[in-house]
Image (spheres, rainbow, N blue to C red):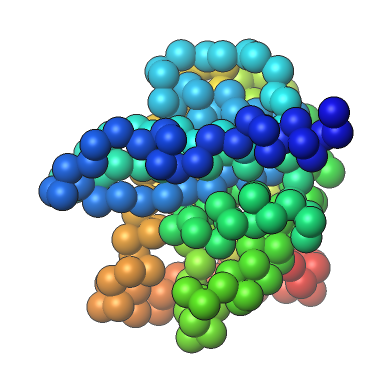
Length: 231
């Protein structure tokens, strides 16, 4: 059995994962992306089940659901664990990516390559969205994304993050630190991503926050000018 057949056989559709959804709840679909071994599945399972699960990742697409109140609003979060790296031939994963409202890009502080890979993930997200009929060019730079640094419970995590901070800043995206083992920061990561989704859906709030964000980024650029690679 090929890896592709193995993966597709184990895909759970959103409808299969769904329960009856109240009309009073907002449904938000979130896609979780990152290199193999960064802890994507462990983060999602901790968020959904409130406990650490160190089961090995098998590269399967999994769809989870969680009902959550964020900033006074009730949500059904459909969380898509993409399972592995994206590629043009993975149509199932691509469909989930196109249909997502927001994206969590995860790297491990133990692996600088997993941080560098996030640039490719972001590019692939943009390309997939451009090919979708639901994509509009005028919101090209407003695709809700956040960056998550996982495994911060490990020794020397502060030192490792300090060494990576300049690269992280170059993404100009909200940044959250997590530990899938202890649960640290996982709640915050999903809250922040949902807030980013809502921000892009509200034109008035989006305009104000985008202006403030641009000012902040301009300030940051004074310190890291000419150091960042175009991502």
